Length: 269
Figure 1 (cartoon, rainbow, N blue to C red):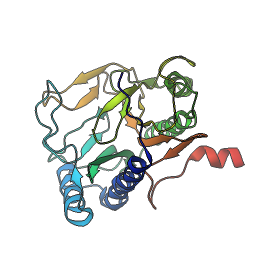
Figure 2 (spheres, one colour):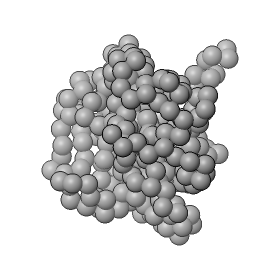
Figure 3 (cartoon, one colour):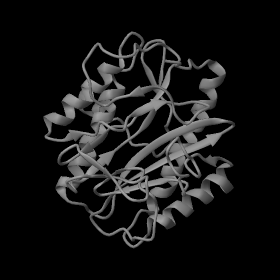
């Protein structure tokens, strides 16, 4: 396994790319309202990335082996869509939940992050799923330190999520990131403590759990990209890009509008 350890120069570039990716989510948030189409959200984000930030939308025309080129600049996964939802003409309506996944390239480095948005009020069940998924991501992030393992990260997420009756999607995972969109290692959101890759200072990877309100089984849609829950249950995902530091972690995908770690509030209370 060829894991690229980042040096000071790489880390500074990744901080910039991460902040810019997060700022796209700050920008698009107010536009996530009933009546807007995901295609319109894609165009707004594309124009902001290209014309305002001078960044490259990494998903556009991205084509890993076996896939046709991805046709849009962002991923928009609505309700029972788990990930890689392709923006289209369908309008959002009150009560929908949507994950918007942003990856930008700046000076050759990738910043990758996603957030959940609720259109209007949202049901109690939908809000709860989004909140628990957010907390599960942070619980995984909090395991990151030199000497810990990726199994520690996955186990913490899995135990927390399943404790609330949610299932963890297993076919998609976090990943190393840097000058390439997807690098080693793969970051599973389930597992056993003490197993898997040992973390060392300078690793950078995403933690991006996908939790389903129902069963974990998935289905791929005919577009070859959009992944949905097989039982049509709601799904939520949050994502940050994380650096392993000398004594813990640093979240790189942070901007003025980034939602705070909810666990810090509960620990302080």
